[in-house]
Length: 265
Image (tube, rainbow, N blue to C red):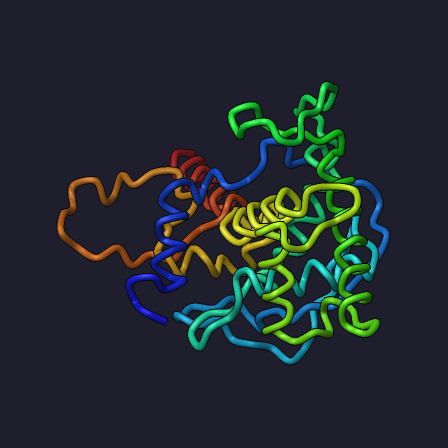
């Protein structure tokens, strides 16, 4: 891939536009888990450029998706942000679990969306979302109807069994509306999936994705440092600190506060 349009450079641009804010405001607690699937996870927190790839699967809980839906989403997000020789893709980063948690909570129920009519499917973008479906319903319908299309078009095969090239063709068909879904506009489903995939890849790991802060390390985003007092007067030096998540930052501040309290006693 041309370096000028490489995934790393593209995600740097996306990250600069709001990696720290790439979390829906509806993120919150999720209901009782309903399923589990296995995904590869790092053997230990990675310190270098490329995370170690463990052969031991890590079990993560699913709160919204059933097993078949989870297989679809994991296959789809891996095609949207695939692995390359240097960095893992969206599946490794746990984007499936980010989307699952969002759909199981207030975002999935459309708690902060206006979902009453009238609905005008061909309205201009300035008029916003024009479907009666909540995000959770949009995913459930979109996944099932895309799977139905794949089974009809590819001799009963599921989306995740089609191979990378054909999966890409299906996703492009959804994006361009060349594939028609019976109950909703295919581009709306695709655009929602793509947006949530980018959010999950760049969001703080506290929300279920960006495992081991892989995307932050890839684009050089520092994360949730609370202050830079010790660096404010340093200029023209490379920034080499590893990224820090919300949880790490809170623990770090608690440690500093505790150390200061003990020192003052």
